[in-house]
Image 1: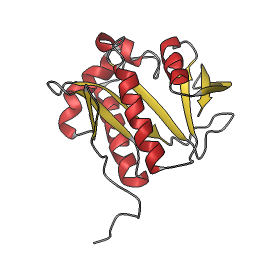
Image 2: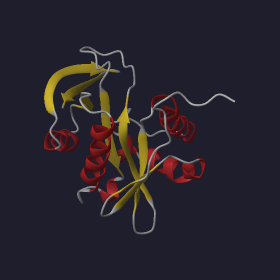
Image 3: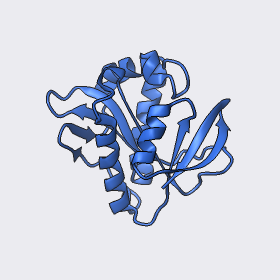
Length: 179
């Protein structure tokens, strides 16, 4: 049997005061699909609600990123009760975008609309960035955010990201921020 490539790993569990970030699991599908079926949740990520099949494909992509790259996205759950309320992580999407983001860890986060405004996305993003900076010292980070998503852009700036470029991605105007 072949061993995984050096440096590859399963997603570690990250814990914060109010959250637990853990690997995506097959039994998350119902909650995960419901989350991405919410038009407000998906508003700035593709512009429309995801089907169950699209949510499943997204879940598989995030899980596979850990196996292939040694980093990826976590599901974000509430520490009290374990309810799935979002996801956050870093990825390398090989996007066709100008300017290119090749070689950068692309940070992202999102929480359900009903829990927004409580600092949970910030708490999750800080945990992710702390983990990624320790694991990949010196590697640059980027964010790709829909230009209309003021709250996420504000959070990225609060996390130390700085505006780098305006661009277009899949027909939408986006802001690329770097850290």
